[in-house]
Image 1 (cartoon, rainbow, N blue to C red):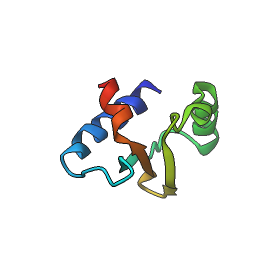
Image 2: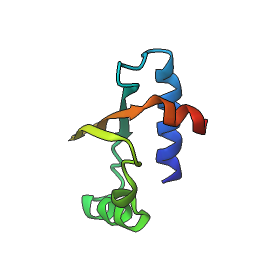
Image 3: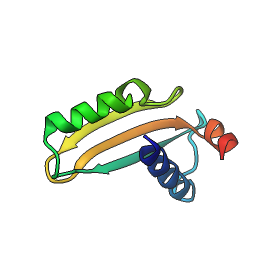
Image 4: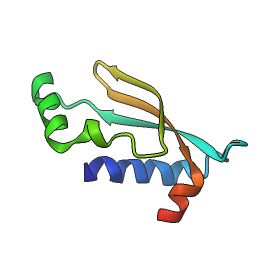
Length: 90
């Protein structure tokens, strides 16, 4: 979970320069979680359940616009999030 949080924070920081918030004060962020070929789907699902990923993702105030699992790539998730909430926490 820490790894996902770090990835989200890094991608968020990089996207700050690329996009200004809309009139609603939110930005869109696309996150790509690479595919892990060393584990089966059942092992990955068990890990997600064990770590509480499905219960804790997305964080409060974040909306999932699309969530795709792409063979050979991994998870591609597009989020809409309020800019002001994340600027305070950085």
